[in-house]
Length: 244
Image (cartoon, rainbow, N blue to C red; front, side, top):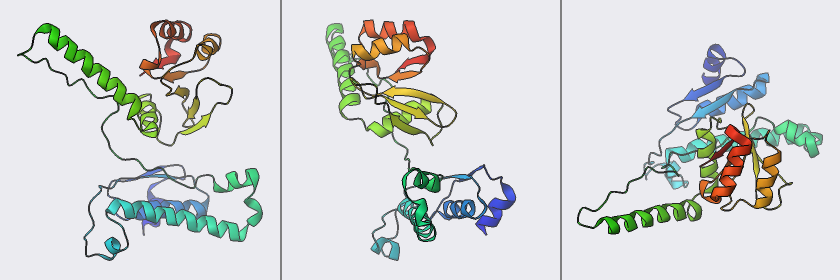
């Protein structure tokens, strides 16, 4: 039934959105339909992490939330398709042929979390002196900067930065091997692209590279730069350089 609804209401390259995903039926239908007619539909499934009844068979099987079932069902759909393809065309699962054969299969899982760049929540203590409040503010800033570096989840931070820069969630990352002093990744969603680096220090060698390669876009962490490096990158790259 869901397949018929999708066929009637969408084109082969559309995004199908289901705000009440449940067990993931819509994702299942989109994936199978793409296999049947060669479509390139994508899906977005939204499901609250609602707890499953402890007496249910699903809970006994190890699933604690409805969203766990959403994810597991769509994993199994893809695994089944891959297994069928292997059995039917084993020659397609080698080298570049494998990438082409599996193109379009898979999904990413995201959850709503607090921003890695929280709003300033510091408030002066009216019972303390101005000097004491200044010291408290300095400590607050220092603690927030340390938290960003030591406690952040790398994938979550990259996702948030890319979203803030207008990227879609289907972005891919490729490490750029020509950079020896910093880990720099090439991010693209098919429309937008940029280089991104989450290292806590940007090497002089990296800065020199971008001073003479101003056709590329670059995103880095604000605290990875001293004043000179930041000025140089901004001066030579202009709007193609961003620091968070």
